[in-house]
Image (cartoon, rainbow, N blue to C red; front, side):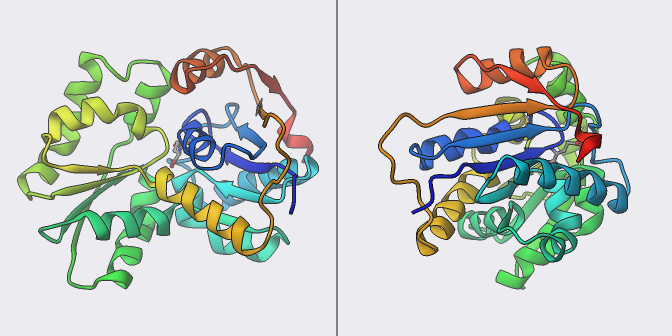
Length: 267
Ligand code: DGL
């Protein structure tokens, strides 16, 4: 048994979609969350910079004595997972394979769409993961760079979001994908808007759901689940101003959150 917290990090508030699923799946676990609000977005940056920023996030989480770190950010998971896994002596969990597996299990017509940041789409990590599970599946992908600023602005349920989604998603709709992977942690906050554009018969996959199950499996298999019956705690840290993070995050998680600002450059 290991009662140390689970670490989770992302470039901003998107990773709260993973925290929400972890809280549902593993309610007894303590969580430390870091959102790199000073340096968002990651999705338009080079792999080397993203790896450097993520290394600092992992060092911060290690300083908080986490037992495992969940790379909530798809951009980091897609481009930097191997480099980070070999650099750190800490179990790391990526969101790509859990998301790919859920999509393969969901599709009926063998046509899967992937949406994500430029970095995630460029890496081809999702198509590779899906085709390693089933090479007969057709995978179509689309970068949706404006979705992250729309979510960070708190505009997820607005006409701006709907028109942007229509423009980005028209090709995938035309290609009749029946399953769409929300390959960026911010996108589940746009779920209603994306679903209204794609139609209710298209299955939306939030990789956070299967990722939380995967974390539970790893902790179970390695006898590291938290066995204390006390109240679990979630702590939030950011690298710049916490106000917007706190406001949108509290709304999303349905509970008031308070974030402490840290100097990530010190890690
Ligand atoms: N949340 C990140 C992801 O899942 C993207 C946001 C960003 O560009 O920083 O890829």
